[in-house]
Length: 227
Length: 213
Image (cartoon, rainbow over all chains, first blue to last red):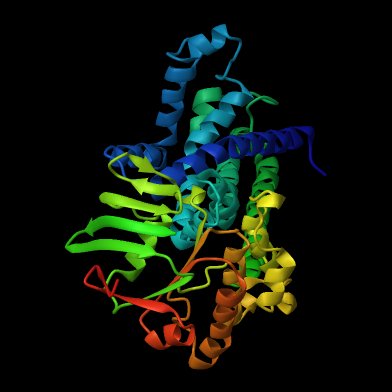
């Protein structure tokens, strides 16, 4: 049904998007909680840094990643000495996807935390639950819809990531050639349009599946909460 | 018993409380904005007085002179709000057991079955909070508070928002709690007739000060 090249791009995209989502999730929850529940002097700066990847051209992000995490980059040279290589490597594609998709994950989680009735947390505290237990047993489960939406947005955005990825990790078959990069490559070939169209259809199916899954998961959760 | 001698200020409002509670049930009446909820929030630990001390028996919750401030979750004071505030992602049984799980078996004051029987919760046990009426939800929240084995129970206008019929259903449960449980309670309301029914000693809170103490 699919050629080995298409399967490789599909597998690589799924792997990169899954890792990006899993690594982003705890950081996104921590940042969303901090932004939703605390006021501090440099909050505006944190907000601006969080939104920056949304407004910067992806190629600029890719170049900055190369400068920072390239094999001779400011941070990359030390990582390289420890045997961790990010540039021109699928792990670098994960990093690029994380940077681009992170703000999309934080916002719905933050909104979920903001919508929780604080009195529920106060009740749990008065019943003897420590702040950490209140967070784990009340706040986190009630923010689950936001976490699901955030994860699906992050996963979908990672699947579609192109600009930062191709600039930072290039276009290496079986290593960094994800679905969007494979489509781009096929379109550069004289007889590649047919393959490109197949991958476009595959991308559409994946995106639709993620959104439909999102819808049903939310419906189920809202039914449980009686909303 | 409970001793309060503290000042709490927020914007223009000042609460000056001097209270020694000896009785098992103390009623506090006052108009809206008189500081009833603020008083309870200071006792439970949701708010922190700027000056003074609050203690229950030998346990000091706050003493600003000695810089003592016990966090809310260590005070063993249960607070029942105007709304039942059941945890919406848990069913009735899970709500009831929420606090019970945090307490070692020998320290549990009220057995689960006894609380379920006292508040007639058996038919509700597997329901989700959104499947309960206002009165049923408030009974579950009372049961949940009792199962946290508190040393003091604070009731912040627990019947507000319920119609007269539901109030008549719930009030006898409070009467039974007063008569059958060894648990000090402060019942705050702006309906004196509720306190008359419960035969509670009553103080009036007006402009942040208790009168008739």
